[in-house]
Amino acid sequence: MRQTRLGLSENTRAVSAELLQNNLAEALNLRLAIKQAHWTVRGPHFQQLHELFDSFVAPLDAEIDEIAERLATLGGTPDGRAETAAGSNPYPLDATSGTAHLIALADRFAALGNTVRDAIEATDTAGDADTADLLTGTSRFLDQSLWFLEAHLDEN
Ligand SMILES: [Fe+2]
Image (cartoon, rainbow, N blue to C red; front, side):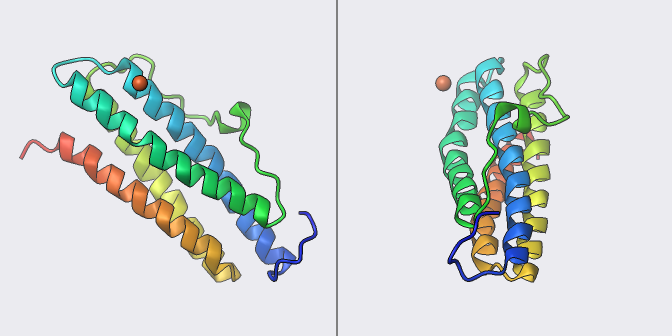
């Protein structure tokens, strides 16, 4: 961690930096998954899903930028390399139907939503209300996106 005049203890900054890095990598991974879905979805609802998936990218990019820059602000070094974002759960290459993509993306939005929610709690407990606040915005976006995805999966 870099030295900084910022008025948070090094321990608090380190806790937040680690959580922000984890969420940065996961969010970058999700961004690529969304584009994969945007490019490969096929079927009767192609146009609508193609556009829906892409509508998540710009707001997610904004969250990613906030997360990386908060990490830098705290004295850390954001690691946004592809190798770091790769993760261990590759997006299904054989997914083509709208339903397959909706499920694959809904699973990923929900998982990141839970990771972010845990980080809100942990950063708040560590004394970094600003990072908790930032991540609360991220969480709200992820939850709303999950609603959009799940609404397409509901037959009732
Ligand atoms: Fe496109």
